[in-house]
Image 1 (cartoon, rainbow, N blue to C red):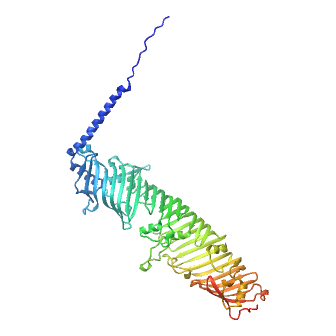
Image 2 (cartoon, rainbow, N blue to C red; image 1 turned 135 degrees about the horizontal axis):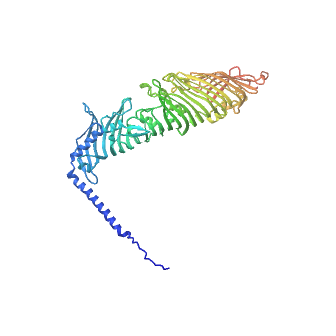
Length: 626
């Protein structure tokens, strides 16, 4: 057996360095050819491309796109380096009608154009720059803009369809747009429904819209009534939006006075087609109202306001869910709805839960009218004259000046002929407080009434916290107050109300009324300041005081302060309008069998609060020997 070896065949592998120069040479050659063609086109452009062709092309494009007559009176300027661009000056846009109505003017428009198309005798433009346009638009009663139906844009808007939530557009209606830049423009929008014209100056915009069938993104900056605003807008279905149809959109308004945003499905023609998330933030409400030419009395107490919510259209209105509301740093959550019924005032209802609330700010938000300006005619109306309310409120803590409440349940109800605010339940100074405030008549200048009920509250703590002076009862007690006024509520003061009050308490003290010292001083002096002789408190087992209020004075009907040994009775008038006193009283024995130990001492109380002056009535002064 023999073996033989055959030589192994070797495969030669050509090094990369052998074929790389060939590829490089080919790429370099292709690049040089492209560069030569690029330069040649631009060098030949001024000699081959007709300026009239490009000018006429962009003039025809403007007319075709807008559906209006575009007139160009300025001399065109064409550049071929680094990209072909034409600039046209002094453009006027007019309606195609007998009166040839002027709709706007443009200082200049520049746009890039295709050299290849120009060599073919056609004009194709993109990347537009519009300088100082001055446009006039009209918003019709149905919410649409008075855009002609003849232009390519209008035809695309009319032909756009919605399928499965997306915009579709037939190919013959589609067209390239590109980027549109607007610089230093002016826009006047006339709203037919309100007969108002809104002017926007210094308009700057960057619009990215590759094709009519593509999504749009735009940023617009403008100034209106001295306020700089920025608007960000984007939509996957811009033609549906511009055509007044339901479509998805995102928009955000930014300014120093108000910030707002919306993300969802909307309709610019019909506001009742809405679904998405919205947010509004007003850091300075008085400044915003001043800018808008509106005013509300005492609104300075309501400085900041914000709301964020999911919103969806309902029957003749909107439903707000997952509401997050803020007022002056206080926050609330809940749900609301607003209805716009034909022939009736809009109605806002809902339930809001606050962590802390200042009812004064809430009243200012819904205040009825302004007192200022009445000499020159009726004052501006507030929200109560234009809106019905049915709100249920709850709060962990609440300020109802000068009171502080906790675990509050309240409501605000406003109709065409009355406004009511009710505190149905609350904890107050260790007790409970309920209240009812009502304004009457359709224009809310017919007066109103207040009912207040306090049960088992620590008035000693309240008096100390409010730093009230004078002989006031320090006790746990109850108060009922019912007053009314014929004056408008924003004008009425304490001297303009009529009504009654009733206070009662047990086991307390009356500081600054020492009956033993009063008896002793009455035997020596005709009159004396109560504070000069009373350094001890009068302890009582029951306190009962009721009074009628009218003309700035309280007429005491019942005044009985009963202690273990002595009892003080009061009657007369307290003119609180002038802080005066005109009372008669008596100190006597609580029990008849102790009359000899505590003989009756009638006295008169005069002077002013909180420093009353006492004197024993003539013929009833105790002898100095007693």
